[in-house]
Image 1: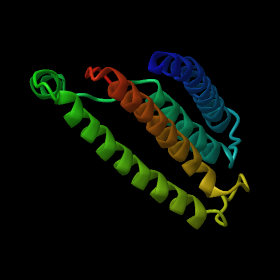
Image 2 (image 1 turned 45 degrees about the horizontal axis):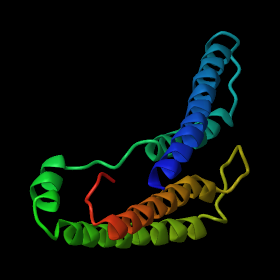
Image 3 (image 1 turned 45 degrees about the vertical axis):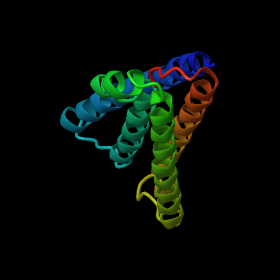
Length: 158
């Protein structure tokens, strides 16, 4: 079940991250040409690029698996009879930490809801949306892995 979820995440968010990367490259090229050749500058371009850059990075994060320490997993979680129990505890700690990060992201979103970009006239809080979405989707992935671990009692990669 976790493989289907990861395939969906990888395809969807890799496409979105690539799209934002393409937009960044094209917009930067246009900005350089117009600024240094035509002497015209778009005041909204920097804010737009910052917005796209944030989304590109966070969509890229979703397409990768978590950083793991294979030695720790092999030496502790797979070697002992109850390694799956230690792994379950690790999942619970990870879920708790992610919950705190989502809660903080929501607080930042609420704090900046009435602050606006000067050229774009959209709320600065929109920069925090991908942060909240990515962490929430990561929580879903950990819950799926936790359920799989509880059913099979086999420590696998997260």
